[in-house]
Image (cartoon, rainbow, N blue to C red; front, side, top):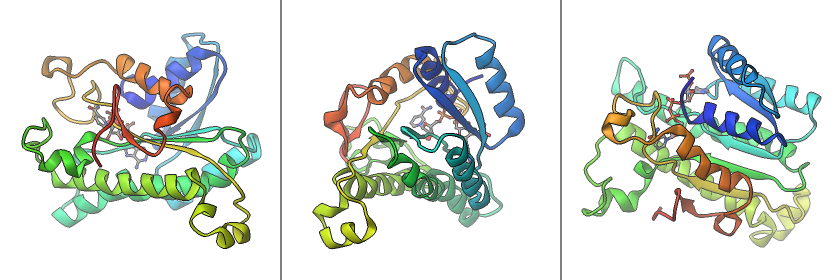
Length: 250
Ligand SMILES: NC(=O)c1ccc[n+]([C@@H]2O[C@H](COP(=O)([O-])OP(=O)(O)OC[C@H]3O[C@@H](n4cnc5c(N)ncnc54)[C@H](OP(=O)(O)O)[C@@H]3O)[C@@H](O)[C@H]2O)c1
């Protein structure tokens, strides 16, 4: 088992204080991940949720099953992503990239917000990419200046705006923008901590270069930094576009 998502589930389950809902669009891969985690006798518990972020039906099913089984959600990590989308045409590849990297996570988050509101300390961690930073695309000294790939970059930029909107509307509290609307929607003084996070170059199945020989670091190391966000050590950076040791320009 590889990938940042699997490692997030593993490190959460290692803490012993979390019940992990592991989303997977493939029942086969998800069951294998679940078995691999369960075989490690970790102190926390893990449950599989079938979830393709491109499917409205599966998003609704996930919302219903989490509502029925748990009644609330404390942390949402939007990790699903695709760097090399398939499709017969350029339009189809762009559509897939935007659907998986931006539209799907947004619709999932919207569906789960009522459950996050039931938590006493809700947080949303959006796994984006430094490749989505417009500042880094335009700054010649940035390592991201020359990296090609409009589909991935543009869809992650879209995701960054979605994340910024979630922060302003649910993190600052929409009442600061339109108190009447907030009252009408019963949002009160909700304060969700919303983070936009670049995990950095990591070993995974994302692309052909995500290997140690090209300088990618281990998922274990990457996720140790993500756990700081999970555990509230970087709460003062909510609303920012952050990475393992600092902040990126949007
Ligand atoms: N690794 C890096 O260097 C790096 C750098 C910056 C940002 N990121 C971001 O980190 C996140 C995790 O990527 P990774 O590096 O761990 O790559 P990965 O191993 O390819 O993992 C991506 C995961 O997203 C899942 N996924 C794809 N489409 C989906 C869909 N429609 N519904 C639900 N799940 C879907 C994949 O499921 P399947 O296994 O079924 O395909 C896979 O488990 C991504 O958002 C990526 O953009 C990674």
